[in-house]
Amino acid sequence: MILERRLKGKMNITIINGIPNDEYKEYETALDKLKESLEKTHNVDIFNIRNMDISYCCGCFGCWVKTPGLCIYKDEMSNILRSMSKTDYTIYVSPLKAGFITSQTKKVMDRFIPSALPYIKIFDGECHHPKRYDNKQKLGLVILNDNNFDKEAYDLTVNVFDRFSRNMHATKFFNAYVKAYEMEVILNEINNC
Image (cartoon, rainbow, N blue to C red; front, side):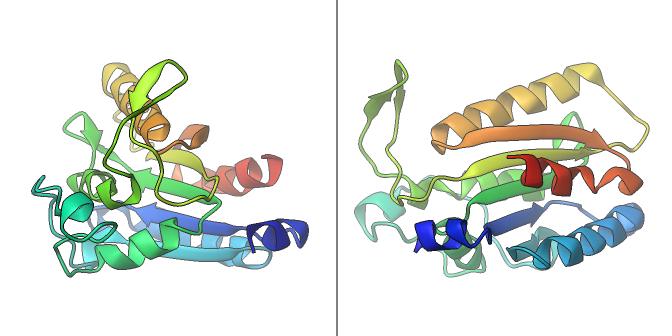
């Protein structure tokens, strides 16, 4: 199925929208336009986290030992996990708040534990959990440029995201710091991968 999708040129794209509130309305509008552009040639799932019922991970590891692959919380994160299990590209969109991505975005990242297996293997000389699903995904990070650039916060966020990409056994294909009118950079990055 994955091979068939790629031959037709149609990819599955998951966008995690971590924009926290209406303060970033122009970015929301740009993201909607981007989704329309992407849907012309790809399958797109966009998740607006602030409007979803998603609990914080409690670290119980029930998704590994009690219900393998399934979180104990029966909330809307299951929709994101379902999309992630078949995605080719995942793009996280978030402003930097208090020196890091939004709590909504981080909450989603933390809830990906069910997509990994509970044991450890060596990958590229590092200890990591193997992937539960066989898809080969690429990750992107889009940080919103709200004219409050903090190089230290930006570098820290990109570094954490790079480690997250490794833990997900994904290829980090880009990170961008954009204004609302520059959101099309995502389309260009996907088309150039």
